[in-house]
Structure formats: C-alpha cells, structure tokens
Amino acid sequence: MQRNHTHDPAAASWLPTANAAGCDFPVQNLPFAVFRRAGSDEAFRGGVAIGDQVVDLAALAASTGLAGLAREAAQLCARETLNDFLAMGPKAWQALRHAVFALLEQDATPDMVSIARGCLVPMDAVEYALPNRIGDYTDFYTSLDHARNVGALIRPDDPVSPNFRWMPIAYHGRASSIGVSGQQFHRPMGQAMPPGATAPVYGACARLDYELELGVHVGVGNTQGKPIPLAQAEDHIFGICMLNDWSARDIQFWEMNPLGPFLGKNFATTISPWIVTMEALLPYRQAWTRTADEPQPLAYLDAEGNRQRGALDIQLEVALQTAQRQNNGDAPARLSRTSFRHQYWTVAQMLTHHTMGGCNLHSGDLLGTGTISGPSPDQAGAIIELTRGGSLPLTLEGGSGTQEKRRFLEDGDSVIFRGWCEAPGAARIGFGECRGTVLPAGAWG
Ligand code: CA
Image (cartoon, rainbow, N blue to C red; front, side):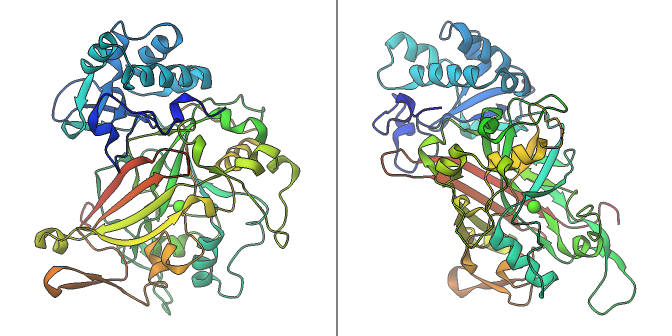
C-alpha cells in the first residue's frame, strides 16, 4: 500500500469542523464504527467519522453517491456488524475510503456535497455498538518496558521471561465480555492470596487496574493450516482501535501460574468505537529496529517491510476521572503518555506468530497488543507500574487545593484513553476516546 491523495496534508473538507485544529477526524482519517441515533430503536449500521459528524453508510449505500466496488462495500457496511465488509479485503476497503474521501473533500461537486450532507448524523447524537462480531480475542504481551516493570514486582530476580525476546507472548482471552467505550462493569469478586497468608481469601478485587493497549481488528482471515507469512500480514489487518484490558491484579497474580490469566482478566475489556484503518495510518509508520545487543528475530518473524516501516507512532494518553473530581467539576487527571512505537514486537509479527502453527483467524477477530509502556516511568500503561505495585500512591491534584490518592482504581473511577498520530508532512488524525467506569462490587454479593 502506498501513500496517495487521501493522505495529502493540504486536503480539506467542505465540512468546517473536519478542518478545525486538533480535530480527531479530518478527511485524511475516515475511521469506521457501528452506530445508531442514541436512544432510538434504529438498526445499528456502519459509519465513517468526519469532523463532528458520522456518515451513515447504510444511507450512502442507498444513494447515488457510490458506484462499483465502493457501493458493494458500503452495502455490506449497512449490516449490524462490519465482519462481511472486512472479509472483502484491502481493495474494497480502499475503494470505499477513496469514494467517501471524494464525497467529503472540498473539491466535491455540489451534487456530491448534497448527497453526502443527506447521510450525516451529528456525532454527539449517536451511540455505538461493537464494530464487529468478535469470534476470538487474543491478548499479547509485547512491551519490554511493561514486562520489566511488572516482572520486577512478581519475579525480582528474573523479571523478563527468556521467551519474551524471541516471540510475541500471548494468551487466548475472552470475547464475550468485550464492550464498546462507555462500558460500565462491577468490580470483580474472586480469590486472592494476601502477602504472607497461607490460604486464599474470597472477596472483592482490591487491586483493580487498567492496561493501555491497542486493539487490532483482523480483516481477512486464513485457512486452518495455512499460516500468514510476515510479508503479507498487514493485508489481513483492517485497522486499529484503543483497548483497555481491565485487570484484577490480586486475582490475576494468584491464579496465573501455571496456565496464565483467567478470572483476573475476563470480566471486562473496553474498546474505542472507531477503527482507524491501516491505510489512514500509513504516514505514521516508522522503522522497526533491534539493537545489536538484543536477539534478532527468527526468520519467520523477520521481513524487509517490517524492518522499514513495521513500527507505528501512535501517541497515547491515559486520564482518570474520579467521582470526587466529577462532583467538583475538575477535568480528568492525566496519568501517563507514551507512544506505541516503543513496542518490542509489531502488529504484523503478532498476527504472523498467531497463525504460525496453523491456527486460523476470522474476519472480526481482535488482537490486543499488550500493555503499552514506554521507557521512562511516567510512560507506564498501567497503574500498578505507576505506583510500583501500589507502594507509591499517585496524588491527583484537584481545584481549590483538593487532593486524592490512588494506589489502584476505586469505585466510580472512569479511565479514559485518547490516541492520535502526528508526523511531518502529514495531517494530525485521532482515535477518539476509550472510556470505561468501575461500579461497586455486588453483582454476586
Ligand atoms: Ca493485557
């Protein structure tokens, strides 16, 4: 895939809000979601973000604004999930992106502008659903800095397991409890072994955490027994969202030896509604490198294209809104900021490794990248890292001299991720928001 006119930083839309500085959704972005008017009984259907509006793809498919492959693609986007559209593959994804770009750019003809205007729904009046029927969800563990920070709390003498530098580590996660931004969930109950105790206790999680991750939406799957070579991996990836892998640390650390995370992770996972396509992300690719003192990847995890542009410079920020801050009218407190470019393994390497033994992926499957922590302590993507296992509480400064402390998440806390990309010679594009809220335990008493 090559950069093209849809990436031109000089391109603008006839819709003024799309051209505003700092807008997440300029005409160069055009991410996909599934939406309907909030509170309505309309069918959910696909949409594309532009400025402060959503282009209703069901309405667009029924209009005269599209033709050929783009029209066929929009017709599949009119369904309640995007799975069938994703299965069409990169040519169809590009055809629809380019056709929507042509309708929205400032040089569009008055007829095209009129058609597109008739398909707009104000973004502040919509609600979202999961964009895909997620058959399977796999969560990776691919940040060396996160592995070092958390490993140091669990195994101080050997923080990073020897396999980490040789393969993208992962476990098979739970698809049923994935929700879209705005998700609320009850603090999980479970078993934990308190420090120094000889028997576990049952109760509400006392060490609830978030994990800052990206979600990779698989576009085209593969046949069982036919692995996807690294050089072709990105043809199978539709796009990327933000993902919060909520984690009950006390439950997780007691249960995960020997078979990995289970109840400590499977109660909720939140993803942002908008999928930013791999085509939109082209200008923000960077070289993927391994320094000479690190093991070089085995041949099946190495390809020229992956070395030249495997890394993605996606800026990410975590903020916390507490009940007290909300009541006092304080803005969410920023906890950390980092970039995905620091990740030890690329999304292409994750996908290829996943299929290498013959495992088949399906359109709409979701891969979590693993927690994204950068090299410095303030770039950590989980509160357990920021507070050194809860030993150094964070101080959240509010207005009028108010303060709060946090070792882990408390009831009523909302965790908010934001993501965006900037590069010389490219527009700024954004991912919107991924928000989830902790409710008190009590679902099970
Ligand atoms: Ca995770």
